[in-house]
Length: 244
Length: 296
Image (cartoon, rainbow over all chains, first blue to last red; front, side, top):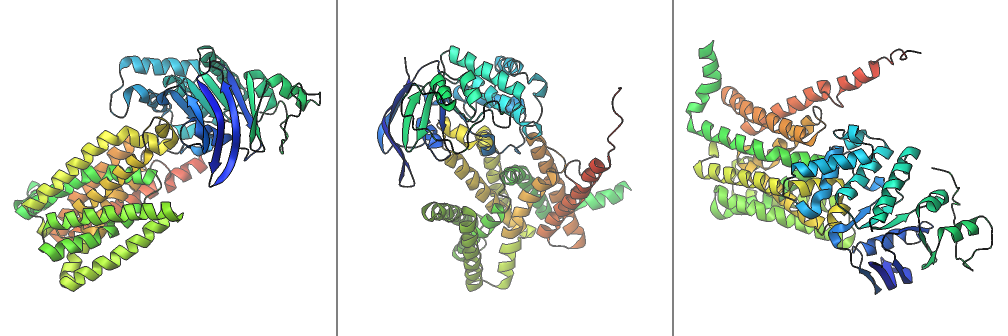
């Protein structure tokens, strides 16, 4: 089953084609790594999947309702100086059911507390986002997507500036979400994380996309003859396994 | 002593114009500071100033058409304020000009046009009145108008509150939920314009911004939570508008500057002695010893 499919997709930004002839299906319950050099079109593809960028040609077929799609941009894209507590941030994940006006009930707060407990941030509930470390903030942001009951989750380098313990917690949570049927797409640069977490790989290079598997990619990186021949891979910043 | 207090604090309100002025001040003090808090948090503290200039030509046109009629002048102000906001927004979108640069250009044009219009149609006394306000001119109609606008702002802000908060933190999340961030932003700017047009009668077009921004920037020295910021800002506005009116009554000072200067004093004191980010807070932090290591 695949609720997210790309059909001969062509995407452009500012009149310049970034990606073309992109095909493929993201499996339900699978975690797909989106990799490629800077400028390869990862953010452009994410924007198109979120419905924020209209394709020049082709289409994105997404059966996940809009309010169940979540996009977690890199932390730098958020105004984390805004006065808001961890609990308040997580509660905004109720937007699909509550919108701008409906009040939160006791059971929603209970659910919020469960989510915080699962992410190990219960004691931070009333702390301001600006006071948190990168890892704690990332847990809170993932908490919001859990509250949102996201069925399609796109993450842009979720493990950047995040401590090792948080990486473990988040990976486990993401695997659980996938097991519950969510489609997850992660922009990653770290091969070790890629091999631990993901089921599929979509690599973007030279304006085209190519599907692969974590194993094939690792073989290629290790200098072994790749199972997928002529992989159009080039990493200007060679990823080192094991760096966090 | 009670007699003295009464003479200082209560007696001035025997006059109808003082009663109307203080109620107008209280209404504005409830509506303006929350807007100021959001402007400040979004890094748009100076936008209020720009908008204040933007309402001037409309106010002037209303004045030319109907004399000192607050409803007409307010209507003109709202229209020209919204027009400038929309123009600045669309110029920056169409040309790639930064929005603050477009805003700056438009508000300067507006200011010049407004002053020109008032000068053509009235005297320099009228100009002073429009620019700096006058409590004497708050009649019952004006008071009702101010109260209605203030209530409208508070209500509208309550409705868009959650959306506004989410949009400030993470606009993409809101967009992902199918809410156009531009709509929330537009309504918010509309409320800012409304608030300034309500404020210009007592404070003048230029000073009306003060009651919006100064309490908000002052509150930043005392709280790091949104509710705290808004509550403290409103409290500061309530105190400075009432005390400012009394000060202007007893010392025969212009009301607008008295109110804003009091808020300014609160700001300076808070910058020196506030709980967060103030000079003393900084000094305390630097002077704090590292402490002895816990156990061995």
